[in-house]
Length: 377
View 1 (cartoon, one colour):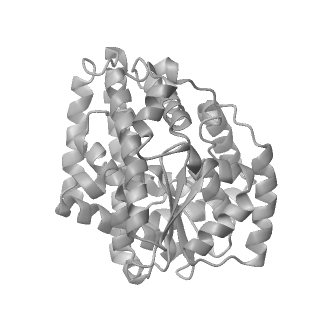
View 2 (cartoon, rainbow, N blue to C red):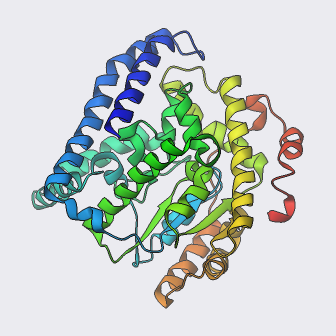
């Protein structure tokens, strides 16, 4: 994997030279990205150094068994984050926190971060308060799109950053071909690439469980893993998938709008027509692929709609758990009831429109009709 990572980061480095003239990126922003590239490399080298130390000091992580993991999938903007955080309230589960995704992908990195956090707590949390303040200043504008907290559950697709395969990188490098292949791993990746990424991902989960409890049930949430749903079920034979869904008219508009701030920050003039078309194609694939996987793996994949999450979360979670043969404790059920009340009163402040991206609702409904119907709402 080190060789694969080196080749992909070298390709990303090359893209920073060309993207001043491709996809509408402004030249000044391309130069700024080029200057920041060493920071990205040092960040990933920190993780790789941790992985090396893991093999010397904590090799026992490889023996950790991953039992009955739960994967929350679905096209982006369909309620996956909300469902993930509700399911993470079950004390039997464990999931990546944001700080792990950013700084603690190795066992070594986790122990280092946890140790520093204890020292910081002893001193009155000066670093914790500073990090919270910086986070609110830098990411506060994104709260309407995706609420972020350093200790909150987060998408573990960030564990693929050390091998330059985390799909979020398309915001900076929309022409990296392997990122689009990873998003459709079940269909587009060759067997060697698929097995390598799954093996790396398995090791990432094992490292997490080694630190936070090998007796825990692992919980993951990743919309961009919707294209690798079948691979996940094959890699983890006792895994379950909960697939979120939503009216594609809202999904498409929300997804394009959610990427706009990051694209502009990185020097693009918003969502270009070429990127828009590729993203809509990908969303259509996610809907279709999850439907197909659900049919092929009865009893292991259950569907839940955004309307169900907002209207009757407690009963909806109970249903999908029953369909996938998962059990619900009394305490977890009580948490559902409280979350269900909050869901019914929630109103997002995120505003978006298809027309902003040269699309219209009738066009999207017609296109997505084979993979989604109003009866699913």
